[in-house]
Length: 192
Image 1: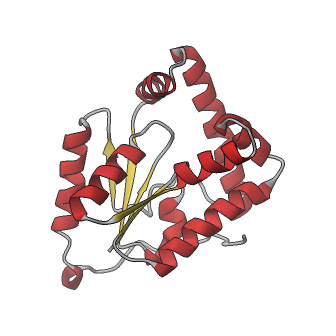
Image 2: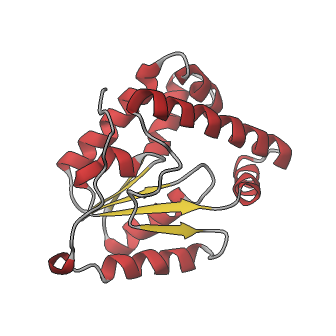
């Protein structure tokens, strides 16, 4: 199977994707790791690269093309990024969406990146607004449209083991013969 894990910054995507990949003995491919590597290569922080991407659309398009190629070519993968569900499109077997209130997400980011909460909150809001604008402009994606996802989980309600349990139940109980059809990813312009 190809499983995608999507959601905003600080929602727990990397944690769930890693845990899910381990539990299923799948490969974990992280769009965040790819993005952070691109930032390091350019001697920038992820926020700086995110800002640069506002003027250089090739940064996003290169990352998104890699995600789409992985989705088209591989199985037994947990593909994780903000747009993994959109980029994997028809190739994904199960699309998961993670979310949490901004305050919880900012707190997680502040702890992970060892920065003040207010700074993390401001940066998270700025990054989210910037990305949403670019996704709409490049691909005609409404980041708030969750209709393409099979399951949405508020990770502020469950800890990582609980979130993993919910996701594993969805994967384990999936019966392809009973599947009446994936929600199509309509309207996206795959222009890389």
